[in-house]
Length: 366
Ligand code: SAH
Image (cartoon, rainbow, N blue to C red; front, side, top):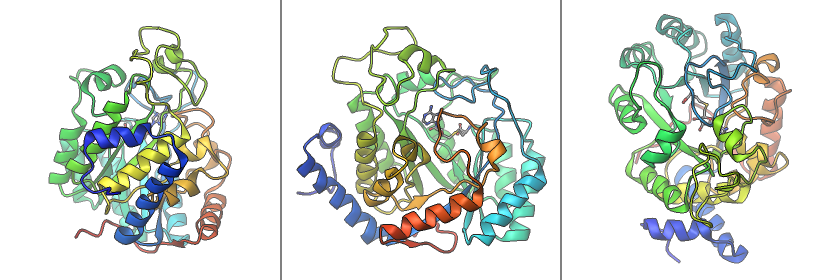
């Protein structure tokens, strides 16, 4: 069976595949491609969730501005630097600073932080701070930031418009165009989608995967959509995860699809998406995500790594903050310290016979 040059139709039929023996072929092909193109090393990216403030109203995300039930925090310079020091101590090559779209994180604050982290630790710096103005992107790149992560969430314009309303005083965003600009500014770029967003059809997800192939992405993150009760999507489509099926309640905010067209936000569907991502972009860095671990704490990360992924992102955020960074409920590992996360990840990687990567772990461009 050939997994080369998969068409959108073939990708869709793999997404719909339920036969275990055939799925095993998919897992094996993805694992072989991973091994051939990015090797056995699992690179660790230290995640620091630096602020939970957000000015946006994304339909899926618990950090949305109008969620008044959430206590907000913004880490101080020293707190963030301490996490970066831990990352260096643990041997990580990279820190990822992620936050809601928070303009309290000023251009100057982030610029200074990048300088400080680079100077003190020499680590690669990845930013995931949402849709900021070009001037911010340029200033941060100049300060030494290496990578920017911005998921396009879905390539379907209608679904995107429904779940991702424009920021204050802005028009609807074009994240694909923004990614191209970021690349132009000299960043390595990462993107990705959620699997099983209410209203996401198999054809849409297949087109997301084709979009991965067409964009020259350095990193691609895919994780299951997890319903948050304090969001419009969560309220319209119920809070049970997995399984917000289209039309479950028939509310306006839950877009309806023909029966059988809705992609389930399940663990299995996420593995299929991870595996197909590897097959369409064999040399990309692909994380086995926390959202996947949230669906299966015992083995989700490991299965992700055995079905195409080559990255994990241990969380360095201090426990008192990480429980407040509630993009979705019941996130895996919210009570742990960075040190606990670190030793747990190392053990999990070794248990499946892989090795922990060293160095910044950027993409080896052919
Ligand atoms: N403000 C930044 C970071 C957002 S959080 C930005 O907008 O890019 C990082 C990712 O978490 C998002 O891109 C989204 O794909 C994912 N996410 C948010 N809410 C989620 C949910 N309810 N279920 C699963 N993933 C979610």
